[in-house]
Length: 217
Image (cartoon, rainbow, N blue to C red):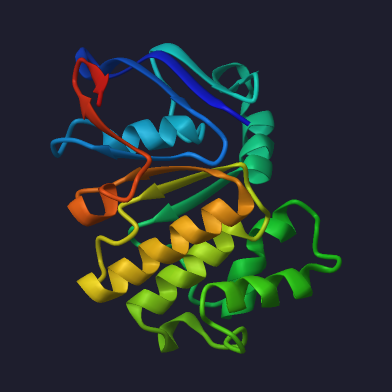
C-alpha cells in the first residue's frame, strides 16, 4: 500500500507551517524526516495519519484520498491501516501490558484469537511473560517496546513514529530502533520516522529534510 503526498500545505491562520510537500513512500520502505524545530515535522506525520487537517494538496494511501473521508471513515481507515508510535509512549496506566497491546484489536472487533497474537508480539519486542505487568512497573525502554507492540499488533500497512527514542538513553534507543525497523521489515509495512537523532535517521532507506517550502533529500 503506497503512501502518496502531493503539494501538501498547512497553515495556522496566515502563517504557513509548510508548503509544497510531495512525497511517496512504498510498501516496506523506511523513510526518516528531519528538520529544524517548529518546521512542522510532527504536524506532517499527523496529516499522514489523518489526525490533522491541511489547507492544500492531497494525502493518498493505497488509492484512498484521506482528506476526502469524513471523521468516522477516517478513524476506521486509521484503525485498520496505521500504527503510531509516540515519544511519550501514551501507554494507558490503568491497563496491564497485554490490555494496552490489545487496544487496536479491540477497536477493530478482533478480540477473538487475539491472545496468541499478543503473546507473539510481546515475545517479538523482548517482553515475554510480562502481559500482566502494569505500566508503572516498567522502565522507559520497556514502555516504548509496549508502544511498538501495540502499534504493530494489528499488522498495519503504515507505521508512523514521532521521536520514538527521544526519551531514551543511547543504548536503549539503539535497541528500540533495531526492534522498530526489524518488526517493520518483517510485516512489510511502510515506516515514516520523524527524528532529531542522527543515528536513527542514518538507518533509513531515505533521509528527507522538511523545510517551510517543501521537502528534499
